[in-house]
Length: 179
Image (cartoon, rainbow, N blue to C red):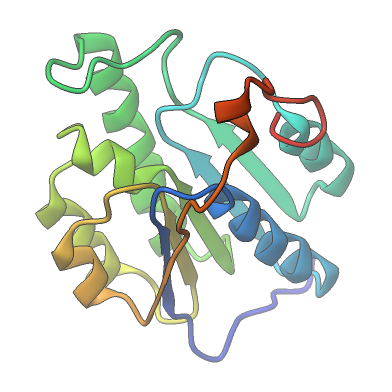
């Protein structure tokens, strides 16, 4: 396999209370795969059902790998259980390997900001991960409530802001659109 390395990998953050953070990251992954860059998405706090992107990843293999690392059920924000903590720790270990191991060109840590805001991962650990990443790896961090230290360490920050959302009108998540 030909190794495609980015000349310089940067750090992007997609945060905010609006819809589209993971979708934006997947759009970037789709573009990268089109150029035969190797992409790894590790999904924090998501683990109870497969979504459309998981099925797409099987079609785009070996260029796109998605690893779901959350536990089943809802995470209690004030007191995450031991299973949620263990899943986040395993995912973070995978993230460390992905950003330093020279296997991937683009690494997306989906919902890592949420994991940090739930105290599953320390802000300092994520800042250190940013510092330790291979210089050729593009790193994308998604999720609400990105910590100020993460925003400062990033090269690009995009905030998704909810103006109107059809969920509030009772429209459930739809297969192929939200899941």
